[in-house]
Length: 289
Image (cartoon, rainbow, N blue to C red):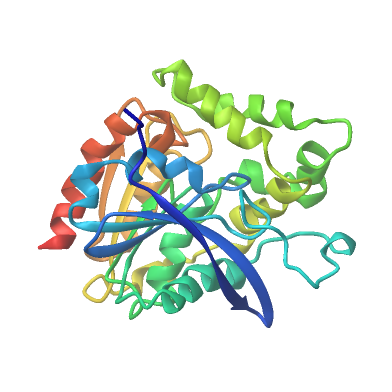
C-alpha cells in the first residue's frame, strides 16, 4: 500500500515592506489555526512530526511556513537580493506571520515558534495581542544571552558566513545545542536541515535573534494575557536560552505560564517530538477550552 503523510503544501504570495515574496507553507488538520515558526537558518520541515500528529490535527489546523530565503521559499523575484546583506529585523519577522494570517483569512490564530520563533512569540504577544488568541514561545526569553550578543555581527558572520566554513560544519555545530538524550536519527535530521541553508541566511537571522529582539521588563509587564495568552516552554539542555532565562521573562508577564522541559534542548520539536508533545498537548487543550 502507498503511504502518504496527511500534509499538503503550496505557495502563497505575501507583500511585506513593499516587497512581494513567494512563500511556501504546509498544513494539516482542521479547527483552530496555529502558525508554527522555525528556528534561525532552518525551515518548516522541523514541524513534520507535529503536522502528522492526529491528536493535534483533530482540533487544530497546523500551518508551517518557510520564511523567505529558507527552505522552499526563494529570495524575492525582481529584487537584486544578491547585492544586499541579508539581515532579519524584528519588524519584518513580525510582519510575515501577520501577512500569512491575513492572506489565509485566519481568525486570531495561535502562533508557536522555536528559538528565534520563540522570541517572536513574545514580540507578537506584546505588539499584536489582538491578532492572536495565544502565542507559545519555545526557547524564548526577554533577550539572548549576553555572551552571544557580545560577539557582534562581524564575529557572527566570520563564524557562520565564511567561505572557509561549509554548510556541513554549520550542521555539525548544532550538536552543541541538542540534548544528549535526543535519538541519533533526530540529531542527524537537525544537522541535515542546517546543512541545506543558503549562504549568509543563518548569520542574518541571528541579527534578529541576538540584537533586534530585546524586550524590556516594562514591555514584558505590559503584555495582556487576557487578550493574548503567552505560554513558554524551554528545554533544560538549551545552552542558548537557559530555563532561568525564560523564567526571568515569565516572572515579568502577569498571567503567563511556563514549563521547563526535561531531557530536551534547543530544538525540542525535532529532537524528540514524542517528549515535546507531553508539554504541548495540555497547552493546546487549554487554548481550545
